Image 1 (cartoon, one colour):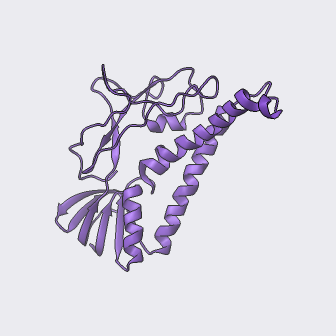
Image 2 (cartoon, one colour):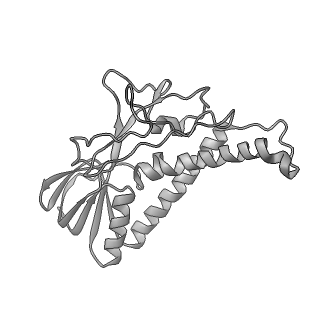
Length: 230
């Protein structure tokens, strides 16, 4: 059993920023996270998708506007696999930065999934299974994909952000993507559709559409699993 001033469940942008600040103020901090530090945003959301968009915009600018500046883009091609590699390296670099800040500020990373066991206790299941006691517990559990009943994620026709941002094969057309669902006290909005123009912008971040008449930006209801880590 370990005792801390603050135990944070979830190491996404909400959790790791709060943990670092608390440690800087002199508190003993533990963070419970089963996956990589940084959460969905750094690993499977904002950061890798923006890296892909940067490459797509570069291709588009050269193709559409290169002649204006005397640049010939004839025969320009996009190696989608290398673009994916770049996006993953970008995400991994930022994750290593968060890990470095944890070490610098003496924050203990407890690997596993956390569940509240009381007002000041967290039970951890996973590689670092244990009970963590803390004067304060911060829930920063983030979100997970919501897959409609009867619709299986196969990585080919239906994807979550993980499959979409790891596949090295450029889709021929936009595909279905599962809706994000909040697992904490707040809501997370789905990314708006931003299709890739032509060969470069065929796809990057999917728009969320969860049924007939659904808005392009959908906010999913809170999940009953709000007490578990991301």
